[in-house]
Image (cartoon, rainbow, N blue to C red; front, side, top):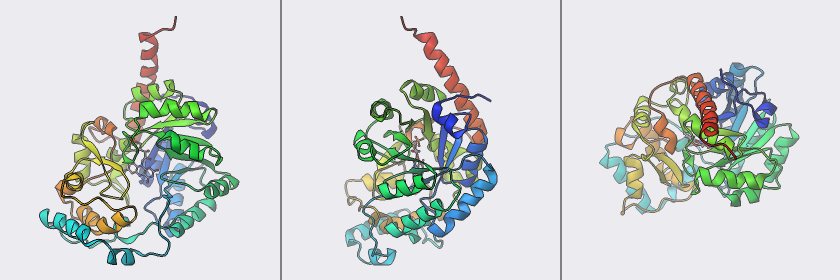
Length: 370
Ligand SMILES: Cc1cc2nc3c(=O)[nH]c(=O)nc-3n(C[C@H](O)[C@H](O)[C@H](O)COP(=O)(O)O)c2cc1C
């Protein structure tokens, strides 16, 4: 098994500075058990389920470090409910969504999912945060948004706390909140993303961050990119898309279905696009009829988060439930090109580690300083 040491990896006691974000308990645990660092995303887990999820990961990783990612976007309404928002949605938006359902003959959703049953709100986030504070989680990363108060409470509870950022402006906003690490996530990333490319963003943030460890994210699917990230001053990398096509991701509650997996296998680096159609915030996804419909000239501008989510929640649930192929979609980054066949998490991690070491050697054999 290859090992790559960085100071931040040593602080966590992991063999390789490869961090893996996932909504799957099995992927998270497999990553940590294989020598990387799995970070489980609780965005879709209501507060009352968070401890159970943490327990499930803990059971699998034992004393190894356990990481959690929480999304706390600003500006979510407190006094609304999903029903009150739905009752007030603009009619042209509702008609547009109905037309998509008709055009692709999507049967009605019969199941409840995050999309059609949960509304993001400050009390939802506070409930999730409370669960983290009273848990034995070792590391917490903030996805979209954070509050300084949440960071200081987690730090007071002894957690290692970091945040994902997509621009130097974000870094400046978070500079004084006491973070322990930063994930500099470039536009190539799957999920919510900005406009600055990873290769531009990482050295910029490394320079600003000084001694604060920076992890590089966005479009990374091959170990040569890990070597490049280390050369740019990152202390490790943070990957999301690569795990969607693993054996472990086919299991459990947030399993990726075969239809989406096949699309991920077939996709090249040019087959993703950014849409606000799913959540209201720009999100990189695999291109599909869903992304095409929302970028069509007759499409209304998507609503803001969480109103867009309330608008499309039932349809998104139905698309997944009934596997309506043209509309099936998933967040995915440009590095999806490297996801070509089903592999186990440990196999992927091993390959990435070997490729990274080869990449570091290759750089030295190509160029020597004189
Ligand atoms: C399916 C999927 C879901 C994601 N959900 C979240 C999330 O809930 N919170 C978060 O901070 N990041 C989320 N991300 C972004 C990842 O944390 C990570 O930064 C990104 O995947 C890195 O780029 P890559 O996809 O090119 O590897 C998600 C990414 C994917 C692919």
